[in-house]
Length: 335
Image (cartoon, rainbow, N blue to C red; front, side, top):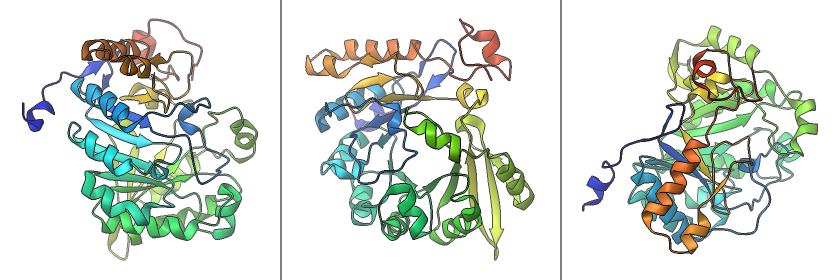
């Protein structure tokens, strides 16, 4: 069967709340060349059991056959894997879209080869444009490399390029206008992201640096020439203009946000091969890597995905009524 036909043969997998799963987020390493204090490490516990490129590709293929045709590769820092272009190329045979999230330090070097391998889009973390602040957050002097990487990604025709800026009270909030200008200059979209305390070590920093994005959203509403809605999580996209050129800004607000959870379409795979139904939980993982290493047949692997789908549950509940009505259990996390 031709690859093009294989891409469109699957019916979408749904969870018990009726939410369609159309995207898979695969962590391919826990290694990183930065030390950002807000890093949530994709909600993973520490592990040294890294998947091979063949194992990653096999899991992605099964996911695509179940309708999860958008695959995002994450870390750690994915660009620390020498075989990343090969991983992208393998997955691109089955997925409609392969994307990447990166800290951008090595992106200038690899952007073109990743595009040639089949990468469509990229998210790049840039917590500050200021060298001193960047080092305070990441422990490294790499701000210029990240800026260069963002520009190289745009020039390599990766689209869209999104800049992820975690909002940190007392550190970078005053940089938002400059970040908007930089995104416009680079030809990228700016995402302003609320700090989530996923890992235990995040909490001490979260108490000190967490910033409620409401005031930023109000400021953007006044500045925007138009406001759109991003299908993922139904969040707003603010279109601003400067000197006649538009720039898009999104605010990602996951904390205590039932709408965010209500519209989640993702399933995750940890770097050690566990299907992870929710970023915020580690008590409902499904081990698929063991099945792959036992040479389980495709039906067994699909059953693991179905089990993980049935374990999905909105972490933040309430607020809009829909999940209060459909939820099989009351849950612990109420907005």
